[in-house]
Length: 290
Image (tube, rainbow, N blue to C red; front, top):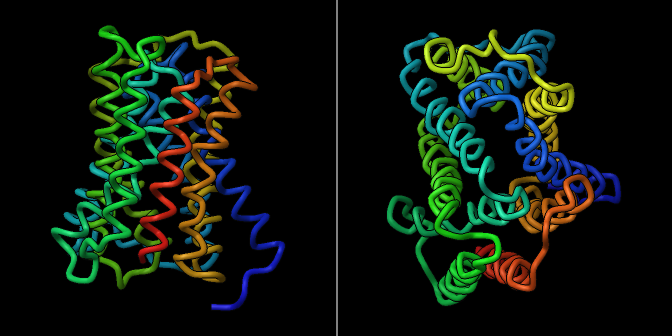
């Protein structure tokens, strides 16, 4: 891969801002929409730019090919489940905490990779990084000002959502030889198919009278934080490689915490800052070990 230029770092920063902005927008979306509706609208609107790109680039969508079961499974685990769990959890937890909790994905993937991937075994530096990162999360849960008995389970659900991303990533290796755009478009199609009956029977969103800010946020979550972000991720991966793109993990919890304060005036305690630093440092050690 070529040496990254200033423009590449700008794109990486934009990607981090887009993904970080998802958390406070999910919070705003929960003012009017249920978690299943938020998940459905995210994948529905997110599919639009991805499928349009596939159409104009003549990339075949294989959602209903012989590998349809992989696309359906990954669509559920990598999109439906985490989108629902995060939206459900953010109803009771500050969005900045969700950003920090979700940023543990690189740490969780390292743990899972040790057991399921031949070339991803623990070493000393990885172990130090995992211990530092997860100690930050444990410390975050001790912040009784922000996490108490009323929302403790919601915070755990957000952590479970991050684990779903990791499992979905491992499953994606089964179809890693296919084009990224095809895979993303196919799993978005299946996620939409899975969510249609769920949202229809459980939440009936057509009966809602949503607030304008919630409507704007949920459309933004789909078109920008899901669809556009994935396309931007493709561009960075192709031009600069996975190692460069993975640096976005350092920025998301930092930007997520800052944006939640700017737009929602969410409380930032000393424990939040210490946990944020611990998670970022943990991710740094894990990625340095690779």
